[in-house]
Length: 117
Length: 282
Image 1 (cartoon, rainbow over the protein chains, first blue to last red):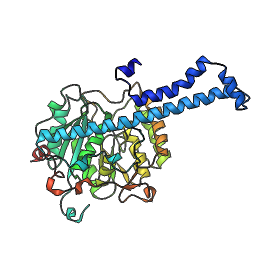
Image 2 (cartoon, helix red, strand yellow; image 1 turned 120 degrees about the vertical axis):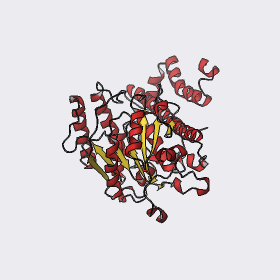
Image 3 (cartoon, chains in turn cyan, orange; image 1 turned 45 degrees about the vertical axis):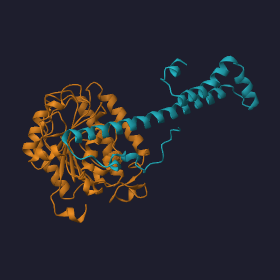
Image 4 (cartoon, each protein chain N blue to C red; image 1 turned 120 degrees about the horizontal axis):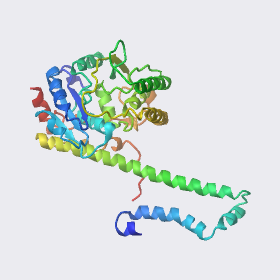
């Protein structure tokens, strides 16, 4: 909550955290839920349910790493453009066309970015 | 290359990525201008924390990145610069003074003869006096073995940063460039995309100043990480979502053609080299 109130965490990622954290909170408050859930699903070994929870957790981490990778790529692209533009400004060169400064790796050649707004 | 471009001599750019190389960059750039008067030079200052950029002689184009992107990000900046200005040949040359400007012409000659798309200057091909530590020797041997297993190419110096590429390579690198361990990864990715890669023996100096980007102590860990990255690259498309013009059938159908940025509106003169780059060669 403190991170959210101080604008360190964006709403969309707060939602991701809430959706991931809620099942764990429920399990912490009601530990027998694992057994009940396993019985409902006819799962003989209750530990298998824990494995499913861990798999869900790993998928969430994978999604977050994907977001980080895309943002990392965007930041690097921005830094490269800033460097090239500043170089031309310092040298008195002409300004490049906007088309030329699009990130070539994302210039309509790759699928749309998967970050939801 | 367009028909009108066939008659003119190729425009060549030397890309020098630097990070805290204040003691060697000035001398290297002066040597480059002296040895290669017809070549343009661009120094990519990869967020140096010292006054490296100020040591570059006046009249040389300098691209100062706002923060450190690593060797991959810095090199891609150079190739994007080359693609934006329509250079025909780009040569990588480390800023630490290891690479001899006099060897650049030999690399470029091989490209001009059409024998390769990318030429790698090798420290270990033929007779060499280049000294290496035991850990680095072992690392180079293991990398050579892995690259041979994955590509069938026998590249003796997979980590050499002394390379020259033609227009197709420039466009491909401007489009995508590996960030983590670019030198060996590029060999694998280019070979899979159908590019021709050649190696040429070159003489290199021992490092004189600055610090190497690869620590000796982390050599073994480096090999493990590089090997993992190379194996992951096998899963990737040869070049991300791009069909490189003229590439072999291995890259057919991968995606769309890489945009030729040099064919933008000629009125804006953006395809011409930077003023500083031109001045340096006059």
